[in-house]
Length: 502
Image (cartoon, rainbow, N blue to C red):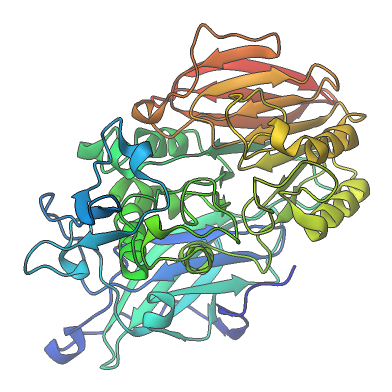
């Protein structure tokens, strides 16, 4: 799998041990880089991994809840600017194609906003080893600057399958001052290995709907980590740009405040994650490449695409597949970069995936001999969804391509769909094909909604208007293999269980 060009590749070699701790002078300590927005490991395979890190000026984020930008929109009827109230019922009415801008508090800059974590120039490298080994392997140094928001990525290669790795990301400034942060991850088993696999799926983390501010963000991070998953899949809407990201600087700040939540920092340094994007963490609601909307100010869709790739461990393509041993293969799809406008009539040319991604899926799916195949989509493929929605494969608006996907996977009863985007949890069984879909639900109860709990349709085997996450486990016992889908609450309590034998 090709990686993006901004990823540092290759290594300098093996060192016997970590460099000796040096005594740093005041000059060396000046402008020392920090890792306040944490590190992330992702794109894990049996022999590769990508490590993401970002260098910051300060050890802590800015904390001043009163200092936030104010979004304004222009009323065309009287040419007056009005504040955009994100928490009002009128917000969605104030979100059409009208000029918008962001007004900074007097005397403040983006770097002094609440949650800001300004970046800094410097160099970084990764040292890694199989847990228990004495020798570290080190990458070459990578310089970072404002062009990537001071973030960099490293592709680690020639790793050993099914091994726990320790890593240290080291930073240095021009004076020789150093700092580091450590982490860990486990590589995937090879396709011939049988091993228990456990992973989590989450979606829709709205910053203003945090449920554990005292604990540093969202409850689910601590609960998921306590369950010791092999990895997490984030299906998108990692954050929401719509309201405040009216230019690239503010969009970067939006990532800084989310990445620096202490519960997220603690989680991602210990659990690798595959990140997928959706509309809100790319640009705005229901967006696609041809989207134009004055509501987003100077921030563009293409800027949002590139910014997402800078802020998470990334591969060359946003769609990809990974094998986790003999029994599990996951596919992750992109539903924003390749879609055509929602307004076009449905038919063969109406697409969310695009021809390239569709051909890739057909090819890789046909080649797979995994016991269980799990398709993970930012948006529903099975549904049901609200009839007024028009942006995903379970809607009538994209029925032609949706039917093609559903009919392709229908013959294999060990193929399952997991989706994000919906702000409620469900298990559904497609009436025609019998394929199951599991919606993981949003990252907090505060963000749940969009469906009535009493509106249980024939497709539903489980329905809950609640936040939490999805846990998926695959294990062999007595020569029998099972996959188990568990919906979990934000407090880590099991809410539903669905088992299938391979």
